[in-house]
Length: 172
Length: 162
Image 1 (cartoon, rainbow over the protein chains, first blue to last red):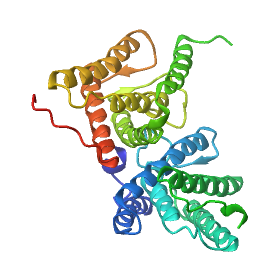
Image 2: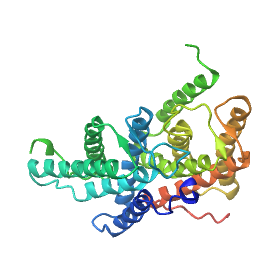
Image 3: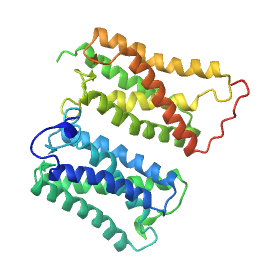
Image 4: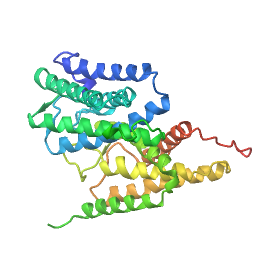
């Protein structure tokens, strides 16, 4: 893999530090999360991955976003680390701390906070690193994808484990 | 627009694979979905590694820019095959039966792939050999079945004939 063997330009660039810490932080975060069982965490993780691989590949194929510096530089044009561990790990946390029994305002705010965090992270990466480059329009797509995929996974988790956490929550 | 042989094969593979989902029993929906997603977790990284090191190449593929690995194989055909592998696995039968069952799946992927390698641009081997496919398919199917057994707390009856 060119990522680990490339000579010159210093071994630890900002991009590499971010990619490596994404692995470390995501795995530790999954490990220390005690609110859910390992089965629940695993299911949520692979359920979010369903959205990250499909959407990630589509956005890159249609040139909506580029990842100039990435881990599998030949095999794929998406940033593997982000789509494989980082975003799924964030999705697991989304479902784990979702305020299902709280007011609509609280739940909207919770959703908004996650979308805002994604936008902030993407903008920082775009401005200060070579990890991503995209047009302003992509921010809108990003918010929609985070919103729909995390909430779909949240409902899927409810259905899968026959919980009734989210029953009728739209109009409460 | 004239369709190439590769495009026709790809379209056919999509149709057949999606249609085969009708044979998954409805009461096993959770199990099937779990296996499907779980196999994606495994093939995603292994498929990328094989392509990154240049062992194998997929010149004709559907997503030309996004990935150099085969989208349909990694995220559809193989996960769906894995559903059938795990759900119909002959648990509790003799070791011979279980081995034959597994080998049939390995061969079922390997033989068509060798034919496609020889006659189409869908897949090209570099360092890759047919037995790499054969053993990696059987290994990953078993790995996924192991996760399935753990997840659903399935008790396998240890056969005395082992």
